[in-house]
Structure formats: C-alpha cells, structure tokens
Image (cartoon, rainbow, N blue to C red):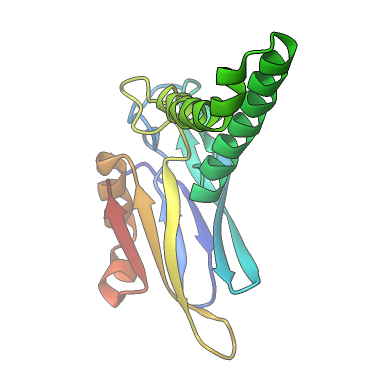
Amino acid sequence: MLTSGATIQVNENISLAFPAGSCCNCGTNRDIQVLNQDTRLTRFMGGGGSEYTFNFPLPFCPRCKPTARRRPPTNLKRFLVVVLLFVGFLFAFTGVGIGFQLNWLLENAWVLSAIIAVIGGVAWYATRGVSLPQTSYYQPIRIKGMKQEFLSGKIKTITLVFTNSAYSQQFIAANGEAMQSGTVHVVAR
C-alpha cells in the first residue's frame, strides 16, 4: 500500500518521501494521522557536540501517536537514572541505619544501593516494552547516522532505522532513486 504521503527536503540532493497509507509503528491502516516526529541525531566530539533535528512527517494511528514524541533513551540517560536511584537509596539506607543504629546497614549501604539501583534501572526500562502490534515504545523511525562534507557540512548520506519492517519496505519503494544513488540507507530492526 503506497498511499502518497509527505516529502521533506534534507538538502538540494536528498529528499525523503514518507508513505502515509499505514501507521509507521504498528502497521494498521485505520484512522491514520500524519504527525511531525521531531527526530534528532546528536554527535559528541570531545568536550562538545552538535545536534541535528529533522521533522519527519510520519503516519500514526491514535494508539501509536504518543510514540512520535518518545525519543529512545541514550546510554547517558540510562546511566543517569541508575545514578539517581543509587543516590536516593544511599540516602535512605544511611538515614535508616543512623535512625535505628543499624551498623550492618551503614557498612553495606553503598553495595545495597548499587545493586538495587541497577536492578531498578533495568526494571524501569523493561516496563517500557511494546504493546503488540506496535514495533516500538519509542520513536519508530530514527536517524542512525549521516555523512557530511568536511568544510561545508552538507549532508552527503543519511541512514535511517525503522522498527517496522513493512513500513521500511514502503519507504524504500517510495524512495527508490535515493536508495539507488546511495544517498539514503535503511536499516530495519
């Protein structure tokens, strides 16, 4: 189903056409609404970084609409969640240990806090699973990478990751010329 959708111009050489016939996350073709998904690629270089933002006009059903705003967590974000849990549990165990004069708890507060923080962080992100037939709890289309000209910064190629393989096939069919020229690459998960 290649119902026409929206096209965005990345630069003068690259345009991306997004079919609008089915939800880009779950694949349903009922009650489709095209939303601008704020899609970002952040690159860190030494002490700084740069962020590239694209507004992809993607088709979503009402059930998958919230996923358009949920950016996938980075490793840094996951680490910060574990650190916050660790600090919270460390303060709690220390307070309880001092309040009830539990020397064993005071001596082992660091280890207990670390273990519970890691388990809690893993559990937190484990609850962020998909509800079938969704293919992602987070944004279903992401930018994996870009190659740019050194001096001008002009984008030469862009690589997109799709969690819905059926939608990725629709995208490939709609962007055949860009795929053939090698300016657009697709990875399906």
